[in-house]
Image (cartoon, rainbow, N blue to C red; front, side):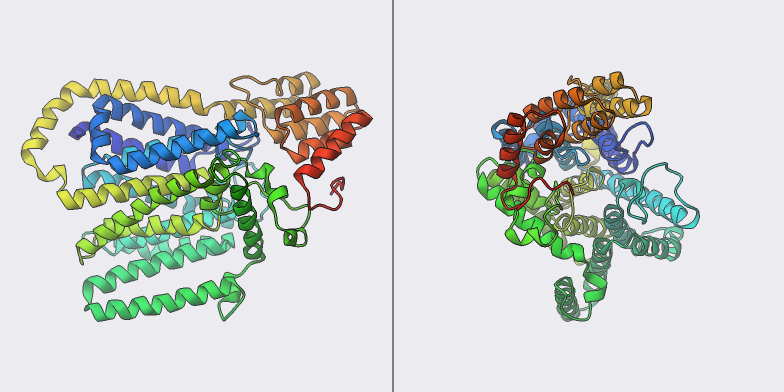
Amino acid sequence: MLSHTSEKVLAKVLAVGSGFTTIFLISDSITDPVNVTKLVSLGVAAFVALGILIACGLRDAINGSRVIWILSGIFLSASAVSIYSSESPISQGIYGSYGRNNGFLSYLFLIILLLATTTLNRLTSLNWIVVALLIAGTINVVYSIWVISFGDFIGWSNPYGNILGTLGNPNFVGSFLGIFLASYLALGLGKSSPKWFKYSLLLVLPLTAFAIYDSSAIQGRVVGVAGIGIVVFFLVRSRFKPIFTWVYLVAAGVAGAFAALGALQIGPLTSFIYKTSVSLRGQYWLAGWNTGETQPLTGVGMDGFGDWYRRARDIRAIELPGVNTVVNATHNVPLDMFAFGGWPLFVSYLLIFGLGGLSLVKAIARSRDYEPILVAITVAWVGYQLQSIISINQIGLAIWGWVLTGTAIAYERITRIGSSEDIPNTKIKLRNNDVAQQSKVVLTGAGFGLVGLLLALPPLTADAKWRGAQVEQSVEALEKSMVPSYFNPPNSMKYLTNIEILERSNLPDLARRYTLEAVAWNPESFDLWKALYLIRNSSALEKELALENMKRLDPLNPDVTSIK
């Protein structure tokens, strides 16, 4: 069991790490201001937490929640197997594809944070995590309202025309704000909430709802409305007879059915729920399922779906979303798992989150009282699950799904066997031990945090080098940005962009050299083979080989040489 001081440190690391990961970004000096930065924050937070657990006794932590540790081990093993067996580059499997970074390292970090959270033994520790969620949400609301009112002060490209928040995409920030809105309401309606917090609902909720509306993200509206509906359920359940709870559940079920029909362009909620992207997601989901079925035991590699979309899509996808419209994520996180790692990864993922959901159900069934912290955890957890089945596993959002799952498991255990806060003698003993362990915990956590930084940093340093080459506008700098090393892992986007620059700069020999290097690095990339086919200095044999591979990777395309 964690000592009192050690748990306080761990809880703050988890809270600050989660909140900071959501809001952390860097602009100007890198090409991807969101994902590579959040990966670094995620890695540091995870390994600091791991260091604290090791310093305090990892064996006790494992014995406290063996099931979740076993499932996590299966998940990570399936991830490693998928990388080893995949035909995609190992570096892509480890770090993920450009603009996503959903590789092995991201999930290793998320698993560590999940497991660390399950070791918490005090409700006050769980409060820190919920507070961090609210702080990150408040920052995004303030930033979004500022952008709406005065314009964006962050110098990044915004092709969407809507608010981006600190997540870099209207859909992501819309979903996160929906989670925040419901969680804020859940805490505000608690009897023990301070008056100032209750009064703040009158300002915060309308501003958040307006920001969600301005994002034009349907998923944000769905998550927000569903979260409010769950809060109302807890209120009805705690204040009225069971018959009223059942009536409410039936009414909510009917409303949910109308919402689902609206997503299918049926019924009065169509204009509120449906967007063309809903239809497109159906094709992406089907392609994800087809991808997983091709390698049911190993998948195609972590974050490898982008290399498989063309060959796994249905014939109907040629018309809608279109032959030249491709994606590198299924827009459904569970299906991403199936595509990445086949059945082992898919099932272990579902069981991990299923265990979190089961823990919430057990905790809810244990008491009819309105417990604001439980309600907040529930609405945030459910909100994440809703967005995860229609969206992408963005690190700033994903961290809450995994940490909240750990929080749910910890909450159920604490309320079942009692918090260590309720055991005075144990608390005194732990305080005495804290004095001797505090230095060890801090030093071990800091040391492991450095390891996490070194593991997560390469995509960021590579991106910074690439951005520097673009600013410098010299061939020498551009070439240096493509020299593979630990701190400069390659990615398909960098190759494609640099090859195009070299070709436009009338340097066809260099363009050919790096295109051949690129296809050797990732022979599963349609776009890299297409680049080899199109550049002027490719030999006839190279063009023939490129065309052969383009047809292999995009078998339904009637004209793989189209330049669109």
